[in-house]
Amino acid sequence: MAAPLSKACEAIERSIRARVPPMLTDLYQFTMAYAYWNSGRHNEPAVFELFFRENPFGGGFSLFSGVHDCLLFLRNFRFTGEDVEYLRSVLPPTTNPAFFQFLRELDCSGVILRAVPEATVVFARVPLMEVAGPLAVVQLLETSLLCLVNYASLVCSNAARFRLAAGPDRKLLELGLRRAQGPDGGLTASRYTHIGGFDMTSNVQAGFLFGIPVAGTMAHSYVTSFSSLEEVWPQTLLPADGEKDPIDLISLTKGFLGRLCELLGAEPAKIHEGELAAFLSYAIAYPGNFLPVIDSYSVSCSGLLNFCAVAMALIELGHQPRGVRLDSGDLCRQSVEVRRVFKHCAKHFSVPVFESLIIVGTNNISEQSMLELNKKENEINVVGVGTHLVTCTRQPSLGCVYKLVEVRGNPRMKFSEDPEKSTVPGKKAVYRLLDSEGHPQMDLLCLSEEPPPQACQILSCYPLGQEAHLAITPTQVTSLRQEAFAKGQITQPLCSDAECREKVQRSIQNLDPRHKRLQEPEPYTVALSDKLHKLIEEIRRGTSANGKFLLNN
Image 1 (cartoon, one colour):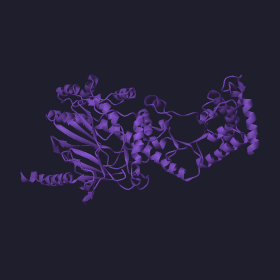
Image 2 (spheres, helix red, strand yellow; image 1 turned 120 degrees about the vertical axis):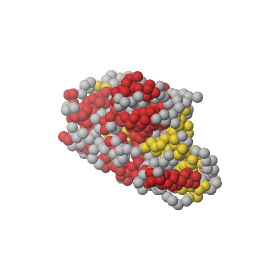
Image 3 (cartoon, rainbow, N blue to C red; image 1 turned 180 degrees about the horizontal axis):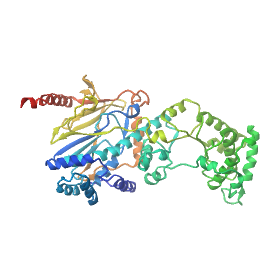
Image 4 (cartoon, rainbow, N blue to C red; image 1 turned 180 degrees about the vertical axis):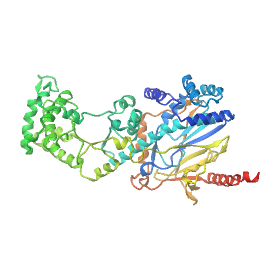
């Protein structure tokens, strides 16, 4: 039975149909599919697995994301007449015309997908997705599925690392749309960084499509567009209760500004009139959302004073300003000074609202600068991150791969001179073993026909990349993958992005600190069952023997 979809999922599905048609793939998928079809092998049952080889950013874990999009893609996988005509024009003229009719009738009704659920903490070398079905069809799916999970998983994992670096209390704002790799990259980044732990986005379309809280007020260009108070219009503002006549906000603000200069020993000549005009104009437009950037000229000599004066005028009229944004210089030092002035004003002018004003910091923030920020004294409540978040500058690709592991019920294995690039053959089951504290301690790969490991019973296995045998007694055992697509339908309910976001934080909290620390984490163990290890050894020996067939004939 098909799982029902929410309105949000319906909107995402429409987006998938538009952005990820079956033609969003590599040409060689079609040439291989034709070769399978031409030799009569296109309907042979085959199994592919999707995994990545190394945890990103030098970390100890990743977050598997994009699964829901893959399911929606599979459900809508069909070639149009226009698609087929284009393929007819680019494939060699010797291609049998009947192949194009085969493509026109193709869908994913014969595909079964088993996957680790969306937003799960995962580790390198673990098969995260198993795609089984007719050989030609599951081959055609490769590039699209990789495209849907590679960046989503990478940027979600990056966001989770920023969340760990920031700590649980500081708010995080994603503002990377203008730095993203195109509109689709920007939307994907906004969605999956929110799932990974960011609280807000500046991306309005992402807020519209995915329900992410949006935030933002003004840029430096707005501030520098003003040069004098004569440009402020209108100049009056109604009190919040609406019961009095409009008040001249410029005169009220000037009065507070004079008192502030006297209190703080500031020089009125250094205050920038254009900046004050910009703040006043914006405050009149949005008296309940006043959060200006205060470093267009000088934070201490102009921006902070202008903000405080306008903010106190707003409070006098019953409105509540929100805070300030710092976008250059030493954010920590400046935030401490800004907070000191806020507290001084709160006490001297009896305005307790100043005690709760927020300070936003934005200035090319990276994971490392976030960690350094936490080591220094600072008063920053919200950190905005753009370039280093959405472009994943430390590692631009997760490197997911899609490898054949079985055809016609026979295991298949790729060999390589680089052992890391060899694959693990056969259709498999994947289990997560938990220790007595509920932390994941090992992921175990078994052949699908093997009985599952049992909790509190000793099991033997071979860690990947090691020849040494290991015995372990798990406290709990969970099956990591579940069937999510069969007979052309999604078979599991799709969680909302908000539910995925909560799941991410729970999953990371359950990790052993050794595996989730950002620097030099302890490697997580992924192991093979005895039976799977023996199969690999048998295939290696058999391949070595079969390689002599030319000499023997």
